[in-house]
Length: 401
Image (tube, rainbow, N blue to C red):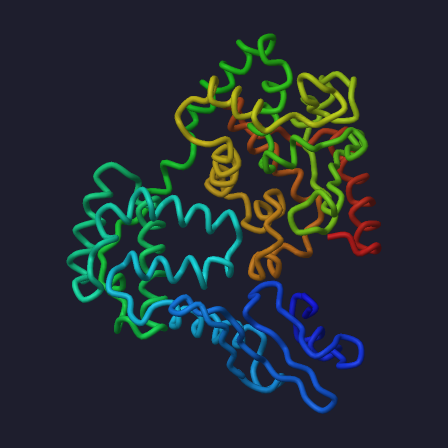
């Protein structure tokens, strides 16, 4: 039996006939194998034909002459072409995508693709012959869907159709991509944030329900005054916080980029956190089990009961970021507060920014909430910034981003 490994450039270089045997199978595309001998390594496609049920094998290229990704694509194409002599409808192309291309994306993405195709694409376009899948046909479908759905949602479904057209094109079933001629609507991003009145209404709802949902309200209030992600807040531990210094450190294992991150806290955030009970290692523990962090389902339940309008809780984060930018807070400062260190452009702008510099600007969001002017720095704030500066310098020396 062939060994099963995920083929990479390094793994291919390390393959040895005496150690690994004659055949090695790729775990990502099982139809792709590497045939080893004492003198050579070759990519080979081996699959069971859906036409006659017979096993088929075809040599692709010597290892090293093409990349692993290219070898996978060529094997997928061979298997797809063998599966049917021709694809006549969009449904036929979808079957090809399902059998040969769905494994290239994450399970979550594939599941959403399947759901969207079955519910929103197949009923109107599934039986359409590829020769009749024209920009006019797709435009009519698009306009019909826009009547009851947002531009962002229908644009996502359109991207799935475009992917199917790509599959049809690379397999020789059609020429060109009719989706490229579609007139798309531009999503109205302004609807994705809350207005000042929305925030005031939400603050009033939180205050009125703090006894009904003590943990959920405390969590949502923090998300209202600090632009972090919901998961980061739910998993926050008291050991992550230094309220005297005004810093919140998220360990690498719990941060999105898998690197430790130090965030600044302003007086408003510190006051809120200091007022919470410390009856768990988590700042926002689960309602029924204090040894675990607050459940996302509880956050969603409280949010849906108290939110000012039907947007997700992540809209609070976008609202804070947008409001700060509109108050002339520098882009690099907002990037620091949002933790957008994954983009190269943003990295280049704010990589040098220290937490204490960003923390001063949290007062602007506090002023927005309180409908007041930004407070002048007092002696306590100045002292806090000095401590944060020392911590930031120490973290820089240790290589913490």
